[in-house]
Image (cartoon, rainbow, N blue to C red; front, side):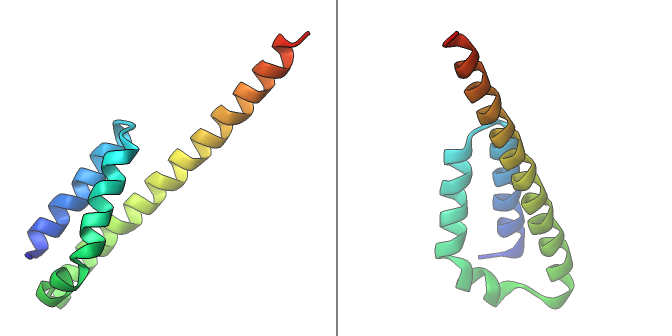
Amino acid sequence: MSISKLKERLIEIELAIKNQDLDKALTIYEEIDQNFEKYVKNIKQEELKSVLNLVEFLEKLLKEKQAELIESKKFLNLKKAYTRF
């Protein structure tokens, strides 16, 4: 598998996360994970930096999404508590 295919799949994960399609993001991640050895064989040293930048961006995006979900959960719990009165 080529490095361009890996970058394409990582960008697809980014778009899925931004579109709230976390199941699709997970599916793509699992596909990358299963084929990781094939990707590693074809990665050149010069291309590692760009792939690493994409992965770091996805990490940041997922942390932001996690924070949003935690805040949303807190809000829903607070709303539920107030509706009991």
